[in-house]
Image 1 (cartoon, rainbow, N blue to C red):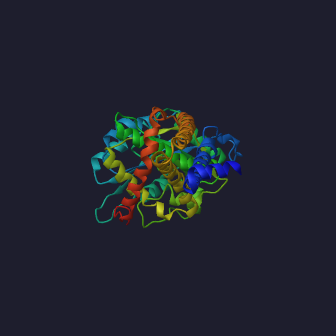
Image 2 (image 1 turned 135 degrees about the horizontal axis):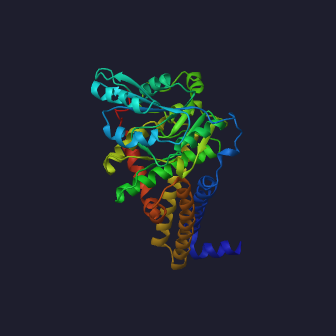
Image 3 (image 1 turned 45 degrees about the vertical axis):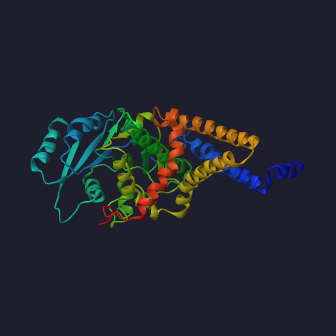
Length: 384
């Protein structure tokens, strides 16, 4: 009580309120980085009860929406070279180039595990990714299916084996996909954003409260898909990896595969402008998330921004010793965050993120605010 009176005398009620706000916000940050993200590095999926005795046959379904020869020549061979005994690759070509499709069909002569199917593209009737996946699911011969995109590239030949093993402990398998590393500030921010926003849904899945996966690296069984009557939100071109997954995910049917050997990398096609367009497009589904999930995501960003604001306020108006205490609190938080981010990056196979993470740490709340402003305006690409 004497300490409180002394503190009140020295700094007034404003100083007490500011100190209280800083400590509460610091506590929220501790909770996220220790008890939420901190559980990811040590997670082991094999602690879950087994539902299959042996690794299953797997269909890899890939929708192809353009005459993408770079995918055929560079990324498809890495999928076909996976070290797994029994799998097929179902390519769903959406287009009207007969020559390109015939080239796809001829690949089966060299790679018998390829299955090709075609959806004729008519400008009057746009084909969504969900429709292409639905055709791929019906064309797949195996019960267990893994879905990826033409932009995603396996980093090792063990990716499919690890994802397939997930089906022995759940009907849904989710894995991580990072952004391909390049030089430059924009690429660093993209990679850090992908890792930390993936950490949100990975952490919830590890806690058995899953709410989504990533469209580049997830899977489920045919029984689950047809039991749910297919994809949800058919009036939207997005949502197969989050809105549909929220419909079918439970506490006990999701396997989380976390390993650098199971990580994919997404190819980027532009700089920050392109990336913000991607975030705006796929972020349009966020308004349909459960409120508890929205709160979980927003509390970390909001508490971080407010913590920085309270520290700046203390540095601007409070006495010298108060400023030192605020800076010490900021330093303790940063050391804790740096340690946890390094552990997280190592588990997900990310390199070169932890060292400069303070840049992303400071700028991402402003980036998120800009994205929220963009999402206010309806994105016509989303709706059918």
